[in-house]
Length: 236
Image 1 (cartoon, rainbow, N blue to C red):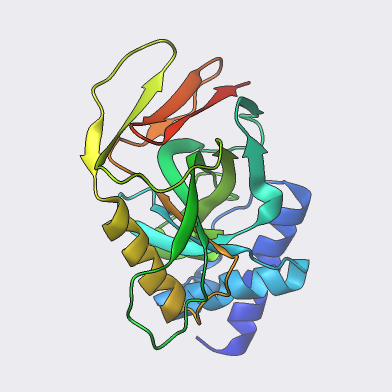
Image 2 (cartoon, rainbow, N blue to C red; image 1 turned 90 degrees about the horizontal axis):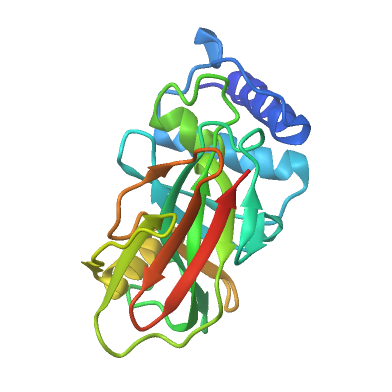
């Protein structure tokens, strides 16, 4: 894709992010055809808006695959936060963890990431597109569907295997096992592919163990992690 279509795509998505107005599908002449182009658009949107990412986020796309994008500190919310369905178009939530890096992720390194602490989280994906993203490339360009991240209390990494359950209301569910270290290793590899991260930056791994849940008016969502804690949010 030549530079002019990329510049146009950056303009479309930047305006939608700034104004909060929904966006029609990208015109056919600037439709994204490669992951490199999609990631270049996402980076261009950040630059156009003057946003500096605080880390990298790996989350489930609408098609079920995992996609990578930036994390922005302005998108953090506290435990118990309310989620506006008007703002979170096509909103989906999944159980997530945020890890704080104790050492830089150098691009050429292959060692496991040094995570000093983690937060239980609810990752909320959204879309600037009126009908949702046309495909995973459009979703990557749209900051990987970045919506909000609701954070629980900071915890040390558990020494025993953890399980996670994502429940609605007062319901109970048996937690599903997940490999915490493998999830962060994948996120670290993605961060290195994109150029690395400094110490103090964050890695967000979403879609852990439990299914992705669509946001519904009045719903209360809680992600529970054995040995780590829980975090909740309510849909307005």
